[in-house]
Image (cartoon, rainbow, N blue to C red; front, side, top):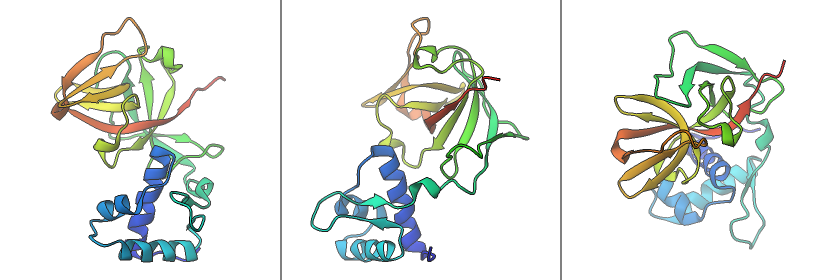
Length: 206
């Protein structure tokens, strides 16, 4: 496809992230806010260029019908994603290593910039995530857009990183396990960094 300019690429990347997260198209006003624009005209111009170049399309006269074309091709050149270490599904441990291995995803779809973590523990077993599984995570661009109930890799300041369901209420965050043997972790939101949202689970059955 025809290459994009910097501002067109910025909008396109944001659209892909938004639609994959929320499963519906954003409004023009949301695009204006995301691109820090005060007028809809620049957004509409960029959308027209994206459409002409074959990156997006929409149904004329119908609201929120914008869709990403060829979304299935986004990960075709990424045969591997890095395994950056282990993530606790019980306590809290530091997940990253200096010399990561890689997970071969030639037969799987991996969105750009995804990373993988091997699960250590059984706190997410009721969500069918077992010890030894590899979870594929999509980096979080805007923590405020993480939906309550999402399974996330959450870094707790001074303690480590854990795989849990994320719930935020006001200035506090609760990280909930999917195993009744583990109590929820309740902490101030300022002490939590959401590093990724779960997009897939890889289990080696051989």
